[in-house]
Image 1 (cartoon, rainbow, N blue to C red):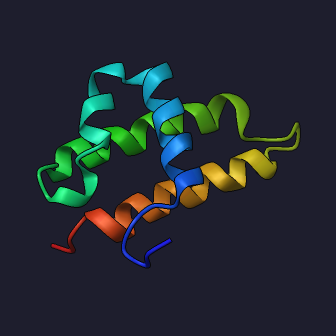
Image 2: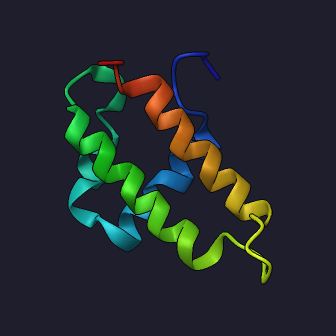
Length: 86
């Protein structure tokens, strides 16, 4: 994995979340590294991952489970890699 891109596992997880919650963004996921994706689209992708996190990412005590930790990491990685600071 290059330092400045998502890993294969992260891309697959993103695609799964987009398929479930924001299928209209699937095509744009392939453009992440080409700089043709705007900040609003990245935020929508993060929202899709957040939706999955809310449904499947927590234990009964609201601590993140293993899957939830992967989702949280993906949310952070999308911001770190693709959202430029204001």
